[in-house]
Image 1 (cartoon, rainbow, N blue to C red):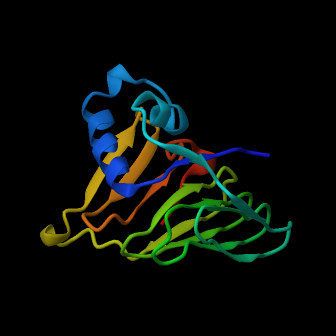
Image 2 (cartoon, rainbow, N blue to C red):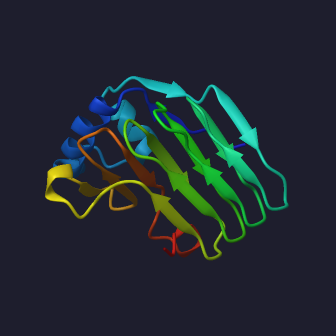
Image 3 (tube, rainbow, N blue to C red):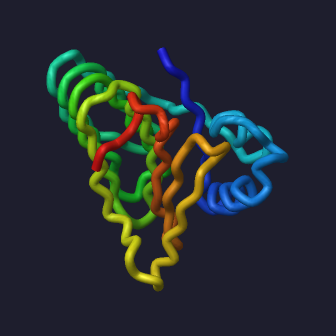
Length: 163
């Protein structure tokens, strides 16, 4: 079973994501190790929800990691959640994140025709949307409200989110 760590506070996440993006050569590690490198408070997900090999609809909650496994899964974060991990698998998966104080970590790792539906507003300057990569591997998007997501190993073809 995959163990994923998350950062407890979004304000810490924003500060350190920008630091890592600018000074990434000082901490050339993955997302999990990066949190330890910058001494952010790291937690383990408290709860797990695991689907089956069919088509699942799974809802995350505070400090929860959701595994879709095989099938065409619909994985949802929750509104105003501290951390939700959305882990798809084989199949055409759909990841839904919400705006305002919600942060999701997304890992597909199964190929297929996958997509993210996000309430993040990236086209308005007033929302100050930011994009960055961590260690040139993980795609990060977030805005001034503490809403965002990370796509783990987004450049690998099996992990790529198509839309």
